[in-house]
Length: 303
Image 1: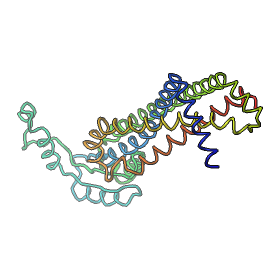
Image 2: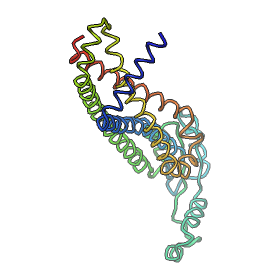
Image 3: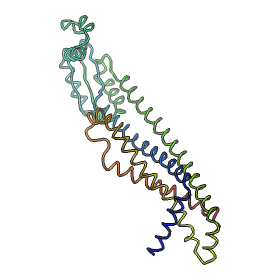
Image 4: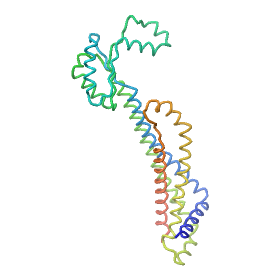
């Protein structure tokens, strides 16, 4: 059995070398498809982490009317903390809001010249953090419909919802585009490998006829072509993983380290995720290479 598979593998590698440029083109197209699949999977992870990071950084602010006392504000704070989905409620006094404003604009002299600590124009507020950005609207509505309706003058709900919605829409667009491109390239890779195997069958037709005459089984003749197609996938997987790792180190990791990791509670790209990508690429590559080769042998080998 070992000798059988050794012969099959030698025949497959011989066919790979014999096809020359066609083999390289097939590997190149397959590599591009695998890269796009990996990018598609990575985008799902990054966009999810981005939304989590934004949720941790951005809260919704409920601004009190000038007539509201601190006691009334603290009562509403306690009520808000009891709402399901709320993780944190912070009371920001008018003076605290002014101090933060001045600290944020400390390098802008034109603004500091017209803002006085003696005339505070900023209202007190409650800053609310939630477990899911899409809960914000319902939670704010629940507060406004209750006792908060007569205490709150305005909220920052609309701006936050627009930001989160834009992120989700952009992420969905990029994901759909990557998936469509990956599917197109996979189909192209299927056709290229199919035609490559078909050419191999044509150039070895006399050898195949002799093998059939001496009693070679159908699968003994087919296996070298199927292994050759899968070999394209294995080589493409290796190239794709190398390019993916180089791209991660050069482009992705600096951005992740500077933004997402500082905001998220855990690393975005873990060893487990890279193992998952490698396994996903290998499975897709083997299936595409094997299926296209089997299809070619079924259609053109006549065994």
